[in-house]
Length: 396
Ligand code: ADP
Image (tube, rainbow, N blue to C red; front, top):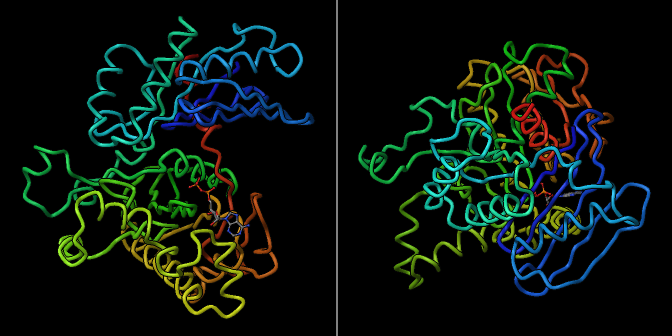
């Protein structure tokens, strides 16, 4: 079975074409500048990148060009569009409606519309991507896979905010959590690596990338996670502030003369390790600057490691123990220095990383030191594979 995975953003669209039986990515690509001019780049292993610059006036155009690239006689990987058995769509927000992936029909499309107010920047693009696929590939089953779904197992005591209760009933204000597809994938892989049933494990998954979130996965279920009503909450991130005293928001609006957009921009785009260092949101730049003695870059890295460590303690307490912690995403998969800083001093919990084994980048490895009672694992995330797997399961 072959699955097309679509991740549609407001002006871009990423895709992967996956053979689910062999778990092989046959082609992957990116459409950029949709609605502006248009550029498609497709990568196929062992071949030169295929680039096509052509007008893409909307997402429908982009999907049509994706199909053309996949079926092209020279640069394509399939002879006929009929080889696409199903399409799996990443959808950012499923609200409280979706606790798992679903085959898309009219009722689901209506429900997706209801979730737009919760993710006004992301869900509309996802919906347009789905509509464009139904138009171009009528009859091909389509599946929605939600960033929020995995976290729907959280108990009310974890997802409720201590605001007046009717703020929840009226406005759906609660913790939803994000990166669910990634947390689900890496916790499943961790169980495989440890040769144990996921039902028997308590795992803390650390998705540390441009956006970062941490999840407590107890018996395969998310029981708490750091992102909240929006992806702004939790640990400090590239440019997002993470948890702050909520009273700072109105204080800042007054002192800096900011409106809602201004204060949102400040917290989402000018904060995090970028805001602290004044240098970059990219950890490669920060490690370099800190190495050259820049104090604020060093502070940004220290703050990041500290905020992640704090949640390892919190989630071990929440689950009454921990069997494994998993590092994933751009930072988690690539920076030995950050993994060492985060786990430093956690020997009392049984967490200890082997300095030699820690020298790894972008591959699955158990980096625990001898005698560590809690396993520390590096597991590259693969959200597209997870989406393809869910899609295949639902349409079989
Ligand atoms: P996104 O949230 O955009 O999917 P990623 O998971 O790809 O983000 O993570 C991107 C971030 O990972 C970069 O901004 C950078 O901080 C970090 N990163 C990637 N590679 C490295 C590396 N080799 N060393 C240190 N940090 C890295």
